[in-house]
Length: 98
Image 1 (cartoon, helix red, strand yellow):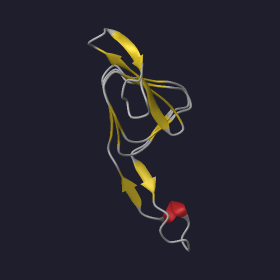
Image 2 (cartoon, helix red, strand yellow):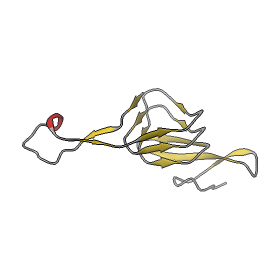
Image 3 (cartoon, helix red, strand yellow):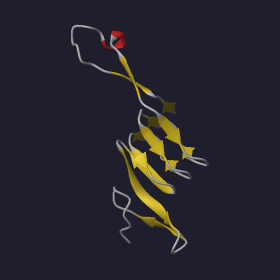
Image 4 (tube, one colour):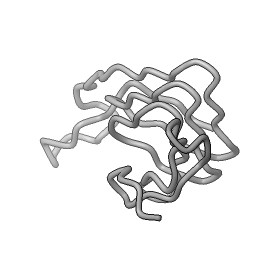
């Protein structure tokens, strides 16, 4: 797994990317979250509590509490519904679909 809060911008093509300015973006991982093998968490990402990240996912953005995200780029595939007391499938935006 890789968690990084830096990004090398590539603004000037005459300078190698490693020698260019570094941009920093906060990464927040909610309590009791699980990140599986080979996932990459990029700068400016916020994972809510009890979030599960699938193996080999590339994660960027803000994700709510109690959700499962997978893919490249990572998308929400299900969230816990407290009203029904069960996990439910969602669309990519986290809206329930079943």
